[in-house]
Amino acid sequence: MEEKKTTGILAPDYGNWVPVKMLYVFAGLLIVWMAGLAITFLTCVSISIGCGWLWTMRVVLILLCCATAAMLWLFGQAHRTFARGLSAHIISYVAEKLDADMSGHVLDIGCGGGALSVAVAKRCATVQVTGIDYWGPRWGYGKQQCERNAALEGVSRRTTFMHGDAATLPFANGTFDAAVSNFVFHEVKTQPDKKQVIAEALRVVKPGGWFAFHDLFYDTGIYGDTAALETYLSTLASDIHLIPTTGETDVPPFLRNKLFLKYTGLVYGRK
Image (cartoon, rainbow, N blue to C red; front, side, top):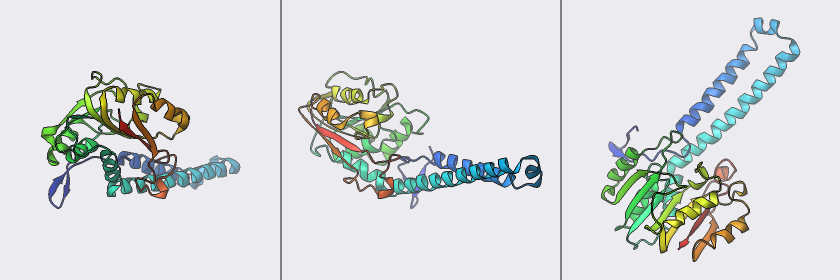
């Protein structure tokens, strides 16, 4: 993982929720469509292809150029917005749902680059935090990155990171005093029923323990009817709440759409 510097000092690298490689893909596609469009104006191409087909190709390529350019702009803006503080703001929002004076062990499910694990460790000065993640190649996060970030943030002695699957957590019932997660549950490929991912997360929390899970809970395509989800949640913990968070986390209007953060919600409380 490339080391970043801020005023000459090494800074933590938590990545970006819109990876740079995604922007490269859109930029590459735009170049391909533009090159294809330019080729249609070559004399040899104009002669070999009938006029009707030629203009059809041009229209299609122009539409592809416009659509790809729009996506490149949108995802580029999102990348910059997350990098300029939105990601950190959301992470802090989730961490603040835990009691700052709590002690014991906290599990961060899907820790990614370790941002939420570090935030919890810094907020709750005596807790031990375990971050677990599948760390597939799609996102570009890894255990060493987490450990490096924790060291730079001064919490390496109170954080541990390990590989694991959120669908089948390798811990006994009631192992942790609290559990947190941020934008992970909907990405768990090994469990198609995402409500079961919530249940699995709560399984490892002790009775009376804290929890705060942030995800696309209001996307009915993922979690089903919201009222039914709330009813199901009520069976999992004695004090459990589901609230929308788009307004709570100051998400800008251009990110309040289906591609990004329109359906975000927080499940939190005490078991």
